[in-house]
Length: 134
Length: 134
Length: 134
Length: 134
Image 1 (spheres, rainbow over the protein chains, first blue to last red):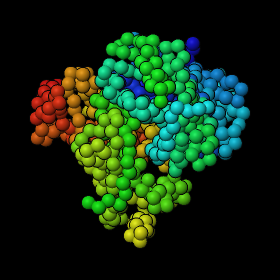
Image 2 (tube, rainbow over the protein chains, first blue to last red):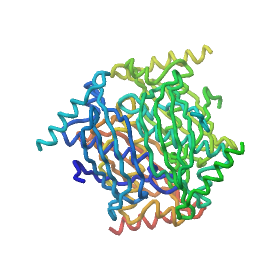
Image 3 (cartoon, chains in turn yellow, blue, purple, orange):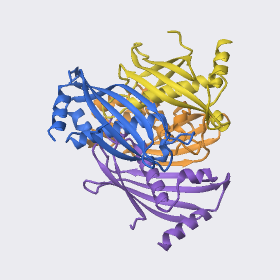
Image 4 (cartoon, chains in turn brown, yellow, blue, red):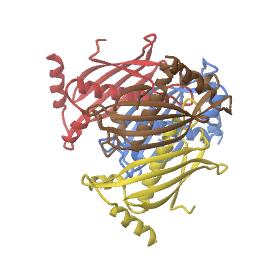
């Protein structure tokens, strides 16, 4: 898959749980952070969007966990975007940096609400246009 | 659906993000906590299991987000279990306590590893037997 | 010490880190949650306050860690309040429920900002008056 | 102050709470992550240490919060170490990267437990020797 964006993330030890591996919920957090850094790479900021009354909400996550990340590991967090109906869908893969093993694979669906109203995602279209014009 | 276990969870304000709602990753955490409390209700403890060399790992989560929880809210976290092949599957619903609105709906798949080896989930069978004998 | 408020908190396993104990940062979170539940017991809500333009900010925390909490533990989180100058100070103790051992002991200083301006804490005085009138 | 180690940390949006600023507990987490990255710069890893039976525990944190970090901000996390009796003390400052404003100032005390026994911190002496020999 050709990715739109990649971010290296170092495991933080407080993210590991009593099993000695990164707690599952943190992969979801890594994915969120990657999406928001991707936004910043497009000239947007999630907090500024919220202040303007534009909120992107996650409507669904589907994450498969493959290889556990541990203390000392870094991962490469990669994403690919697609417009599916009114939703923006992020396909997100996390690879362990040391050996490129797939750590987690996610599909994250986003909807955009502007001033409290669900939109058909025109806001996404503008962002995607921006991507394609690069 | 008939649930095997229910737990009331009060939203903690640090779980809310800059959008003023509970951050998505925390629903996954609520669901984990509910499963582990369910384990305790069966006489098991997740940490003790780990020390005995028995680790339950989440292999997949699929969560749909329906109604945002906010500061001051409580939710009722409900789960139903099913054995599907070697996996134990948890169907988990979170309802906002004030009006019973569905906040999130999840399917969480678990595998059991004993002393580093993936099992066919016999450990689950014993737990489920325990449930049925109640 | 006579406490103004007590809250029982069950350890959640994702709060435990690779050392098998509750990560230190979570004691600070337990203390925040206890203060906010205390607020609710006084008829206030932290999120509602923020929407009204009234923000309580932590200006300092001093926490001593005494006994580690682990998976399966509950703690009793207790607080005592005092007005010290323009600050509201919370003295907060966490006790392991099973044997009453002191888990952590904190002093947390709070300032109140209303519509962006630091106040002399008159807002606290009203809250404390409310406490004393009980 | 001359720092022993510096680390740039980008704010992650899930670390911001409903007040729109990084939740206080996350500064403690930034400080932990900085100490552990510092350990790695010395050739140590916190998880590996734990597996060898060597556990560093935080015995006290004292953190003053000065300037709130927000979505989009980065901070420069700096630390200075000192041996004080049996404790290793970390003086840790977080600066907002955009204008070098002091975001938080912490003093974190650490004790070392080896195979369950509190030590006089000889383990620290070896680490500090390593620092000085550089």
